[in-house]
Length: 70
Image 1 (cartoon, one colour):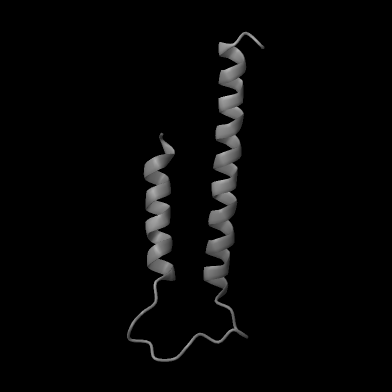
Image 2 (image 1 turned 180 degrees about the horizontal axis):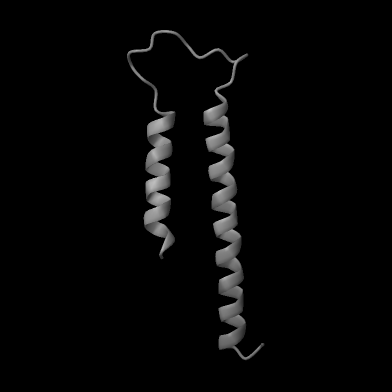
């Protein structure tokens, strides 16, 4: 699918962002969330859901067209 390379590059970049640096000794403070990470997490989730719904609409339309339902 045309979204395969986009999805794989998105997942790879997210992996780089969310991977822990082994040179950092302190643990992240939960009272101060990293808003960039939070935004990336929610944003990427929203993008993936949007792609899923778009693909579903396309698939349903193709199904109806092929079976003479539309």
